Length: 224
Ligand SMILES: [Fe+2]
Image 1 (cartoon, rainbow, N blue to C red):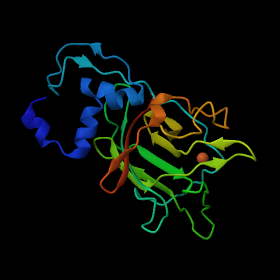
Image 2 (image 1 turned 120 degrees about the vertical axis):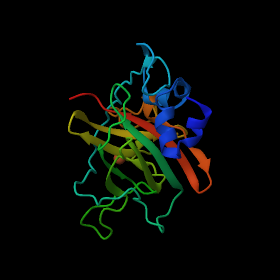
Image 3 (image 1 turned 135 degrees about the vertical axis):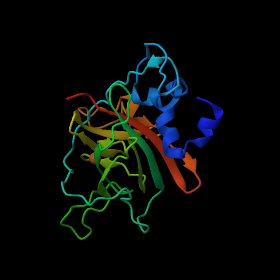
Image 4 (image 1 turned 180 degrees about the horizontal axis):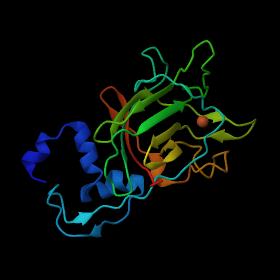
């Protein structure tokens, strides 16, 4: 990609571009478990390289007992007054060919900083829950707080996580969880042995941003 074209990209386009270039192999592509590209010749449309990208579908995780349908449509699920460290997810939804999936729908839910979930019919309905659609380039940006750990019983803890389901009419629905690399309750310390918290593609790095923590993730849907 030429320098001038690179400079013309805005931040969200950049995220999508990084996810499909060789430069991204060391970053988001590895994070998402994308495989080696297959040589197919020059891509005149993109001008990026001469390879067709292959992305491994994101692994699934348990839905868990706290999913509730009907969350409000919003990408900001933490109110200004929500206690905790502010956290922004920059994400992109792609297919197994790494092409962005316009119109993918995401449903996210999480615990608060102390590990509590909130019910739709409780005193604070749908707190820390939301649904939203990825953009035409497959990208999305979630504004929230870093979730807390919670106990499954008197001795077993879970690593902090964001629950997410992704749906698209032409692809298999993805239900998974996203974790954070510095969590002391990642495997072998995760109390949930049926969860998939040992997948490095879903253990995200947190970076300190100007307004809080930031992370990035590529979610790859399998064909239906
Ligand atoms: Fe959970």
